[in-house]
Length: 356
Image (tube, rainbow, N blue to C red; front, side, top):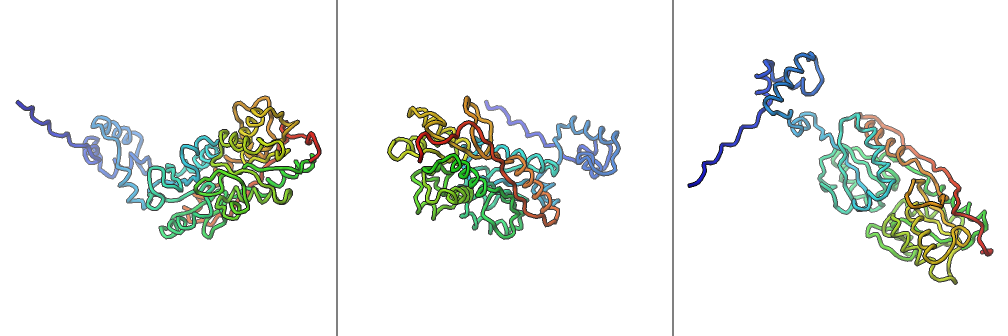
């Protein structure tokens, strides 16, 4: 004997809520939106009727169609998502974007260059897009966004037409770090860089790798260092992480005959990894090896060191991008914004033990 199927309960709709509350459907809609000439008593009555019918509110998809907007802002991150959230810089920038765009009632949709995420870059239902640290190979996707009429803001990316730039003084800041080391007497200085290409190739920092680099931020920081230490090389990391810094540091420091007296890491995470590599090899920081980073983030496990670094305003960069999105969606033409990093001298740099 088979039990009879229970008829599916009809889903409540706005018309049913309006009828129960004794108002018109348009009045009920205004009560839910919180806008328009609806008294507090009427709104309370409509919401009570909705609760009684277990009605959650108008379908946001239908609202989006009526408005002609999705209410979603895409954020494209160059890193793989599992790596992106390990970097405090990305989290700080996302916080800044959300702080500003919250006034729009918009949500953030995370996308990556390599296709990870909830939607494809090519067809994501977004009103605007913020590009974070995207490589110079991203031009094709930018062209697609332009064709779709989507507002575009880029944080630390190659300058592009019709894309609002939120920039950082990566080249000058790296020059400042290099000048600091030069003033201490260092001459043998190596770099540990951010990823240079979309494949995140780990390996020696060769001239060929630099010439082929698509990582804009990494490339600019290399240029800044080489304005002081011409021809300086090192290792390219696969991602900005302590683990990658450790691997790169062990490679750079293993041979006493070729060991640099100082290392410029392109992120604080990478710098901490190099410090750990030095410790594993029995080297003292900064007596045997000076190390500088870039970002100015608070990191657990760094004690007793106070890292010499460039402090960048990550949250403010995100906020500037968020304000740019709001302006562009309002039909305005905002100006590009450029931020300046601040040098912080910590305890991880000192004159070389032996003149370089």
